[in-house]
Image (cartoon, rainbow, N blue to C red; front, side):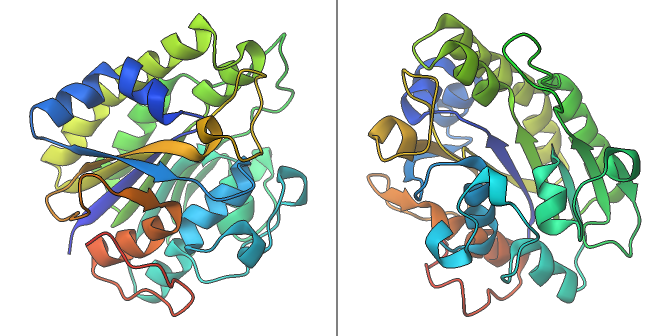
Length: 275
């Protein structure tokens, strides 16, 4: 059984991660982590893929197909399975995750901070980005999100901890994936992670770093371009055993997390874990 932290860098393309994320690349070079290319499911839209990552089902199977149609998860997922198994979970993430896994639609005045063992996710810090636009990106600092993640890890030691960072996606939308702003933000996210991941590893966590989808030259994502479907999958774990040349299936993340923590995957998760 291994405590596990999944980090989702929203909108981070595989090629951008390889080119710009110097800390993650250095960790691979030093043998502290391994890197694979992973293929995201379709449509390459955030909320559908948050649900894919946690249910092991493609969007056409779990039924969430757009950000505008988000609702509480109706399928067995990482959070529900761990709750039944008596395990603890924590989240630092966009408010969509509360709607999906927190038991109700997100209310910023009620759900921004949760510390309640009876809740579906007992320890959580959510951000809304309400009013986000090209004139006001409303994105939280990656370092602040990493610090909040560490506080939950250090104070509560959840078996599963999720960190979701939105800045790459935000700047990709406003400036496109071909911009210096997007590329530099990929490095800034990586730089923040260089201050968090060593702490998590020292605290006994396996750490997985990936993205929900990529970004294209139009500042958009949803379709079937390689730049949208090819995302990185970094594993700070001695247990992940996929072949180095494999292109991994995004649906394998959920059963892999449950396997690392020592909990059985439900029958709905049909893709084999990466273990």
